[in-house]
Image (cartoon, rainbow, N blue to C red; front, side, top):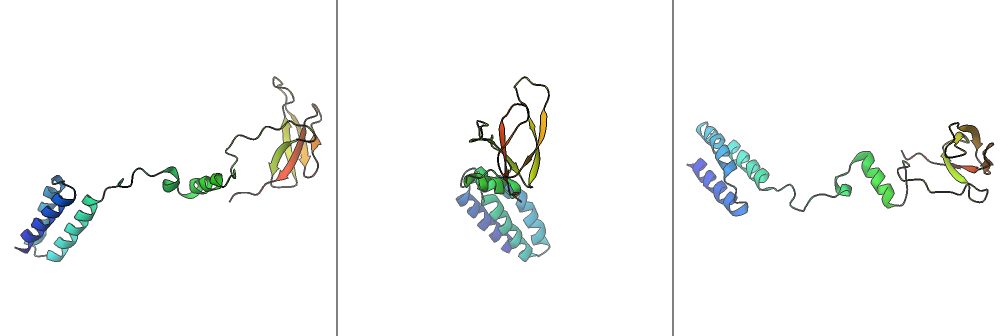
Length: 155
């Protein structure tokens, strides 16, 4: 008797909230098995869990944005990009003239870094040289200027 009352309450609740009756038939068999075993406590818990799961709509507020759904490294990257930072060098580097007044900026975590320069667009050989922190330095072949700037690691 108590099981039937519980089923009626569930049926009316489902009809009022979502209008979905198909999942109820699957749960009725489970409820009847438990009623026959006289475990009304488990029946009420199962029915309440079923109601919570079936009535809840996953996208009730709409589809989540990238910022709402991102986690871990992606979330930190998105937050840094919002603040105007580029922690993992994701964005295209700014174009520099390569003169002494406007040298190419090279990020580094130490006091020196090995730099390769393609002096001409169609050149097949790379000119390698060490770039030290401080003043801008010239490429020994073409004369472009490079400057090493200390860069903090994002993690």
